Structure formats: C-alpha cells, structure tokens
Length: 499
Image 1: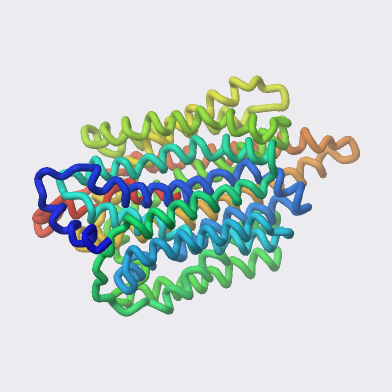
Image 2: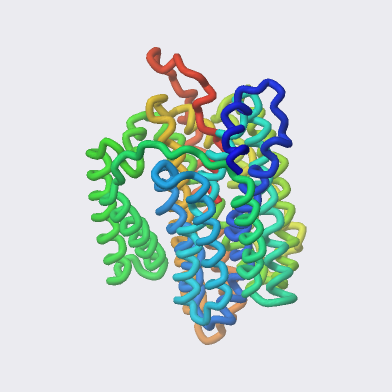
C-alpha cells in the first residue's frame, strides 16, 4: 500500500506510463460511481409500484427523487473541503459506506416517510462519490494521458442510464422494489474492498475555513422552494405553497448575501458576473427542466396510462438512452468546430419537437410513435447537454474556474429537483381538473392521459423557450489577463453532468 502511494508522483512524470499501473484504483472509483449513478436511474421506473405498495400519492412518492437530488446538491460543494481536511481516500470510502448503508435502509422502509428519509441519507453519501473519485483519478494520470483515463470514467455515466431502467423493471417485476436498493449492497462492499486495497493515500491539504452559515442556509432554501413549487401545482395561493416559497425565498436571499461576502464561499456566486456564463447556465437549467422532468413522467405514463409492465417500460426507454450515448461524443467533437450555439439550437429544437409529439399521444397511439420521440429526445440531449456544459466552463473567469464545477453540479441537482416537484404537482392538478370537468361520466384513464398530454405540452413550451434563448449564446471572450495558463487546469465538462 505504502509502495503504491509513493509510486504515484513518480508515475505522473514517467514517459512509459501504462494504464495497468492505475487500473485497480480506477476500478474502485468506477464501481462506486456505477452504484451511485445507477441508483439515480432505477427509481423512476419503480415509482408506480412504490405508489401502490406504500399506499401513497404520487406527490408524496416523488419526494424520493426530489429529496435524493437535494441531498446530492447539499454535499457536492463540501467534497473539496472534506478531502483537503480528512484525505481523499478516507472520505471516498466513507461516502461509499454511507451510501451502501442508506441503500440497505431504503430496502427495509415500511412507510413513504421512511423511504424519503433514507433516500436523503443515500444522497448525502452519494453526492461526493463522483467529484472525489474523479479528482483522485485525475491525480493518478499524467497530463498527456488524462483524456483517455477520464474517458474511462465516462463509462458509468453512459451505461447507467441505459441499464438502470431495464434492471429496475426486471427487479420490480420478478422480485420486488426492495431489490432496486438491495442490489447496491454487494456492489458497495466490492467498491469498499477494492478501494481499501488499491486506492492511494493522497496527502491532505491546508483547508480554508468552512462556510458553515452557507452550508445551513442552502439546503433550507432549496428544499423549501422545491416544496413550494410542488404544492404550487395544486394551488399557488394555498398556505403550504406560500409558506414554502416565502421561507425558501428568504433563505435564498440570505444565502446569496452570505456567499457574496465570504472569502471562501460554499458556492462561488461571483462567477455570475460573466454574462456569457449566466446565459449558458440559464439555458442549461431550462434544458434540464424539460428533460429530467420528462424522464420521470414517461415511465409513469407508460405504466399508469398505457399499462406496460415495469420491465417493458425499461426496454421501451432503452433507445432513448442509446441515442443519448451515441450523440454525446458527436456533440463533443462538433463543439470544437462550431461552438455551443448551433448544437444548442439543434438539440433543443429536436427536444421541443419530441415533446410536442408526446403531447399528442392517446390511449391508442402506436408504440412506435412513442419510441420515436424518445429517440429524438435522447439525441437532442446528447447534442446539447455536453456542449452547454463545456460552454459554461469556457465562459467562467479563469481565476474562478476551479470553483465552477461544484457550483454548476449542485445547481443542476437543485434544478432537477424543482423540475420533478413542479411537473409532478402540475400533473396531479391536471388529472383532478380533467376529472372534475368530465363530471359524473369521468373516466380516470382518459383524465390521466389528457393530464399527461398537458404536462408534456408544458415541457415542450419550456424547451421552446430554451431553443429561442439559444440565439443569444455567443463564444466567450477571453480577457488578455486570462490568456496565460495551462488549459489542462480547466475542469472536464463531463464532471458537470451530474448523477
């Protein structure tokens, strides 16, 4: 173990670098990332079963997703401070252990409230796995080989969305929903054993003062705002809605005030002074709301309205994941030649068209007419998301670039939670409205299909807004004082893709 940790610095300078030298620690990181990212995708397909088995409403169960993503966003900014303070290997192994324990607790949950709480615990463990793991591998590889090595870390990011729905569908249909969490136990144990044996000890760094006030205010602000948005789907004037929005809004304003005054803030908000960065981030958030809210809704529609089984749903979703996998590297290559604007226009245009197609589906729509827009959505996501992430990195002032990834990754998780909460609330309210409009002759199935159509139409309008906003994107201007420096210091856009 000591010999390996000593070999890390010399390996970085050795011209005869071999991937075999770091394959074991790389494997430990990949196993951990696969477990966490896979868990983010398996729950969506299981939601109808969770609603039924736990005798809960959709608005309640969606908090198993919202709570998880908010927990991820809360701990991602702490990853750098924790590793500097306690050591990267120790914190990485602790987060894997914490996530594995959270998975075991989720598997034995008896009530919706228990499941939501345990999912939050899962998120608190899982949020640091990807950023710490990537940072460790980044140190292991020499500069000229980092692209190839970091590319291997893209494997779980590409495989998990494709395999997650099918694995979840198979487990739900042939075992039980408990197994979508139990399956993490052997994976987590293997990741721990491999990590203990092969991960190198990285020297601790001097740590700045922890932004405790920001760490407290951020979860309160984002959780209460997400709650208010969720309740707003039913009524924007209800006491629960107003309470969530007012408390969350005040906490958010206080958080912004505190962060702007901190020398070492939890999230570096000063980067929004760059108009190019702000435009890119806003566009990225709009794309996420349209995409990830729909990724939750489509499995629900296929099972609840069309009657497909969980496994059939997973198989139907596979072409979307494959399309995203194919077009993501294509988008990456094209970005270097044409920039972000054409890719954002094409990607969001395709996404808008796919959502408009889904908005017209009925009970009798042929399956191929559901799969086609799903493929288009995956292709649009592949083209636009990586290019927008790279644009945001390039638009950040160089002196703040190292603090951009925690900000954007956390913000993406928060926006995803808002999308899930808001669109689920809207769907629930539209079902109620369609049932009421039909009166005594109301057919619950027809009301549900109409409500899904309304919700897909709303997401289409959001995507169209993003398409129009893409026209104001421009290539970031590099200031003269920022032209010096090694481009290798730039973070990898893949690190911002979230879970």
